[in-house]
Image (cartoon, rainbow, N blue to C red; front, side, top):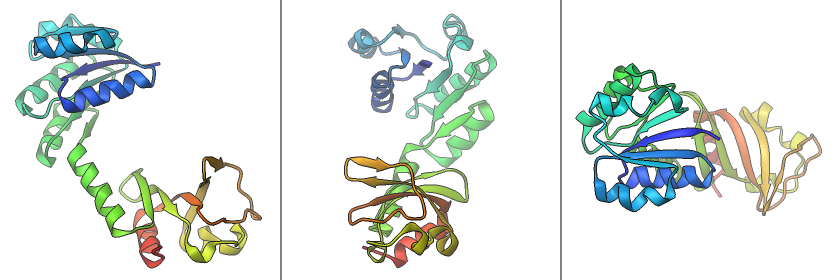
Length: 218
């Protein structure tokens, strides 16, 4: 269980907070809007009405006691930037800030954010990849070159064994698991046979996997 300080309860902050609660995390929310905090307070471990641009207000929260501090403000970039910097100066273990543009992301990193999320860009990139290839169900970037993809089984692989297809040798893809209906095939070996409807979770070079999925459209 992690102890999370969540600053800013707009649409993004609320969605994040609810998901963290579902996962069993302890979440303290802070927002300067009294009505917003009062409406959400019953759900959370702690809730505070405060302007976090005030260093004393932040200091009173014992920032270093939280596992991660999230600055979920993007409509007021100056506030987001200053709060990020203050959290860093007050000894936050990890600061994650939300950006609305690439320029904001760069400034937030310079201000002390350990990670900057850029939801609009992330969603747009994922949608573009899914639209580009009907075989791509989902994907996660690991770095600039490598990703984990969930893809539909290429039709020509149906009924064939893993060793026969040899995805690693031929296509540079490592198959991590197979999602088969409501179950997951975790233990794969050379004799594993691909079945119709299989969804493959694969790891490899992003460009190579995208090229493969475009060539093998469903």
